[in-house]
Amino acid sequence: GRAALTPTPAAYPNAPLVAHAMGQIDDRTGTNSLEAFQANYAKGYRLFECDLAMTSDGRVVLRHDWSAGVQEGVDPEHIPTAEAFQQIPIYGQYTPLTFLDLLGLLALYPEVYFILDGKDTDAESVTAQYTAMVEEAEAWGMLHLFDRLIVQLYAPEMQDTVEAVHHFDHYMLTLYQTPFYGEADLLAQYAAACEERGIQDIVMWHFLYSADFVSLLEDSGIRVWLHTVNDASQANRYLSEGAWGIYSDRIDPAEVNRI
Image 1 (cartoon, rainbow, N blue to C red):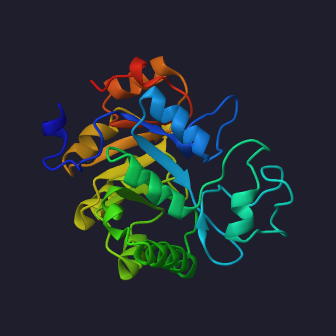
Image 2 (cartoon, rainbow, N blue to C red):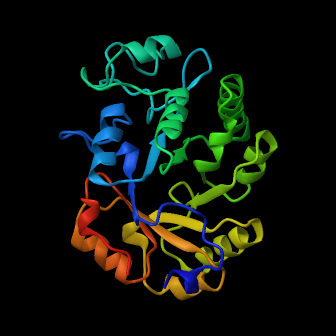
């Protein structure tokens, strides 16, 4: 049961699914686009993960990275300004989103939460990214919407770097950039660091997950999220084994239930 797992769960939507990079649209994954958000909101998703990148003029936008082929004329040697970014459709057809657009979606959809996947791990880049987001939100009077942003951390101490810029209510430690490959003793160390910091959620690759981890984490009041799973029966199996949530590109929320 939910209460037994953690005494003070963060007020995320109760649905166990997270739309990975805003979820799939048509046959495309990872677009972080407006259309992907709208399609997956209509399917029933209320938790969305999005990737963040910095434009050449220092604004935060939703893109996994600047690799070629996603937007015409954009590649690591040709990083656009925020204004140019907004004018180049993703794969020629989808609407790109800036962080300011994301705040607009939070304002329009009061039951939605966004998980921020900023990619950067070094303190200087993290500071620049979060400073840009805070300044933009302040300029538009939208800082109050930050209570529905969930910051993905790539190491426990990254929380200090983010907090030095701005306080966030919600953090998740994601292990995909750490040396974790399924070792229970290492997971116990991360859990202890999270408990100490008041971080309630740990995210890992689904193939590294073991049902044995649940009791290890339960004592710390920590919930496990798995990425990326696109088969509903597989997702239900993980949830029945004690995982709390699943990142997915395309599972229909109606087919998945937290036990």
